[in-house]
Length: 218
Length: 218
Image 1 (spheres, one colour):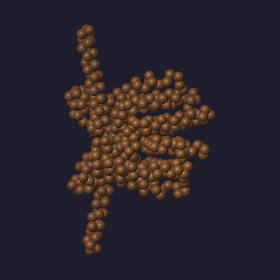
Image 2: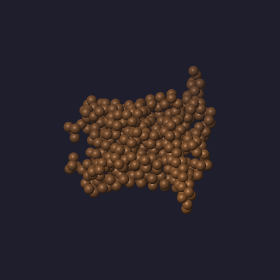
Image 3: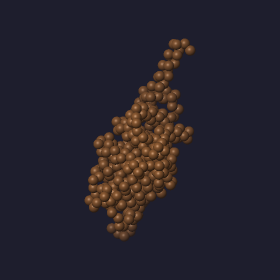
Image 4: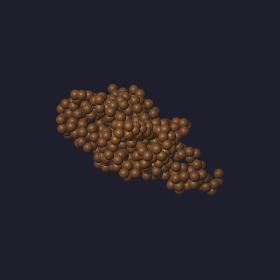
């Protein structure tokens, strides 16, 4: 390929990336504004592209929403990784993952709103079987670092080896995630990003630190 | 009023109640089947009434959904009350409320699905300001027995009086409710009603019993 042609095709790839990115942004904005259910026309409009261009990248609305989930999870991971403690046991690394993720989520409530909509409304009606399999894989891969730390913790002894791994891990993930999601809807009590929300999150971290720590270390 | 007229008007009241009840049933069924967003025509059809009849009872879709929330909460309360322990302190009564509610919710996953849709999708776009105020009041009154038990527990000493009431109560409610909701979407791990879900719920009850119990009683 000539240099000129290579430059041209690189420009097309960049444009494609930008437009896919703009679609993910638009999905998050529309969901955050409560403009649900998502409509393809509105989504294209918000992303600044035409419907045919949108369909060029995403054959279905489900594909666009899955891409949004992946984009947000990648951004979260990029934020979290460099902020984890350098020298810590697996239990503290696991708790730190929840803490740093929550800090990020508090600064971007629209991310949590997107995932609440995705988990509790969109995926129940908006995904084909194939797309749902992709969704399962995305969720599995996002959970991977957490489950790995849990297993390592039980092996190295920073997490009580007597705790039944599947139930304990599931209780931790569902309660931490469920709490973060509900803090954004308990509007009789909290804005979801105020000091009370922070206090609730800290209490959950403390509770789990106590539960995970082996009995002889307590 | 003559006896005959009274009987006739009673029949109308009963019919009205039956039809309002059928609408609540239809909302729950449609949400549970993932047939969201709800559409008035589909709702009337499922409830076996005409659109004008539906509008006679509920001026808006929001009103129908709020009625559904109230109906489900009343049914839950009716199930829970007679199943609470007769002689127990406020802490154990509070924990029992969560336990019995979860038992009911496991046998009726469609109730939790409805509230997940209501909390995380519908209310963000489907309610007028007035309706949203009604929603706040419904949620406040459903939380009332829980907050009362928490306060009583701190006064009588079955709940650690050193715990900050607002943060602790909110952490308990958001984590218990959030966990119950997420157990129905963590389908890589659980059906939401299997033994693993039961184990997660039991672990959360144990964790909160330990957290609430005053230190000198531990």
